[in-house]
Image 1 (cartoon, one colour):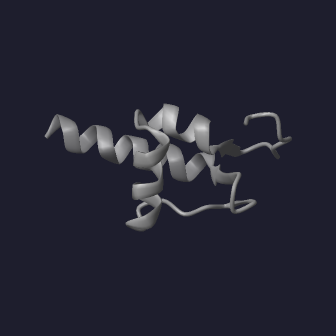
Image 2: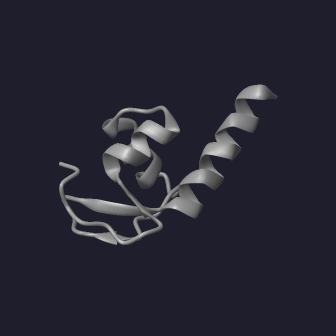
Image 3: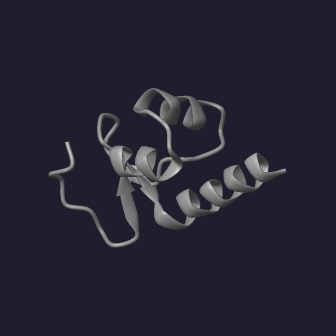
Length: 66
C-alpha cells in the first residue's frame, strides 16, 4: 500500500525493497539484522530514510562488485 502520504526524504517498504533489489521478506530480514532501521510510519507501514537506503544500496553494490 503506497497510498499513505510520506514526508519528503522517506520511502515506503515497497519502494525501499525495489531500490535494494529484494522482496519485502528480504527487506524484513535486512531490518531484523540491523542493517537498516525504520525511520517512521506505523508497524504495518514503515518508512525508511532515503539517505539510509541509498547508503545501504551503495554498500551492497560494492560488496557484489568485490
